[in-house]
Image 1 (tube, rainbow, N blue to C red):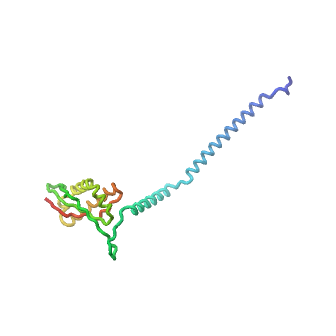
Image 2: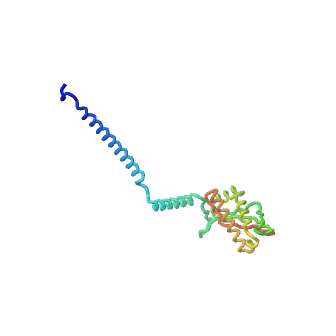
Image 3: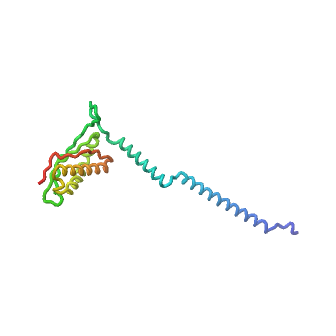
Length: 189
């Protein structure tokens, strides 16, 4: 055999080796480019942190506005020329009795509430009466004799009770709606 008839053994493996390297490089570039493209696509629409905070505030405001629109509605009075609303009242059937803070005396009060929203607010008060009574007792026991004396003391107690009632209703039902608290009976012994 002549040298020309023999295949060049050194040339063939080098060509295959280069083809394999080029194929792997092309595969790596395509994979890396695809990963980069997917990452860019996914993160390309993201907002900066400050823009994201503003978007969340707008979203929360929109949700709050939507909740207000779908929640209880104020009931206008019939045949009224002014913007007056119908007031609904509810009186808790049993009086609340508890000791006052730092005193041997106790306070026994009847509690009534009012709202100018629809009947769902009063229904929520009736549904959650036990939890509301517990919250009111906790508030009353935090007042001292001096705190509840006089008109200003009673108004402060009424405001504290209104806040406690609305807080509980907001937690349980998403809306408070109680606008005033009244004391049909008020006995300090």
